[in-house]
Image: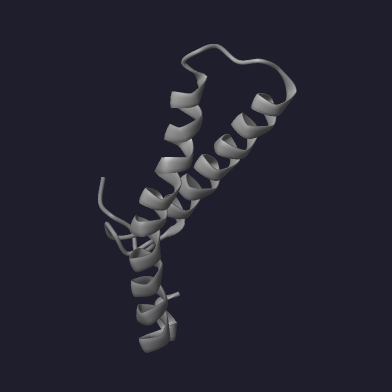
Length: 80
């Protein structure tokens, strides 16, 4: 199937990385709320801290991708 003009190139569209950041933040916040409501099993701190540790990792990926995308859109507004 040929690529259309709207198919984003890899690492030029930040929407997938942005959605990943949002989902991880939502999961971490939900895990924190669940931790406050009820007692959790012994393995729970590993899951909870893992979610919060993934957040800066995904942000470190998303920030340069988004900056590159914004710079490209500033240079060529017709690319939007």
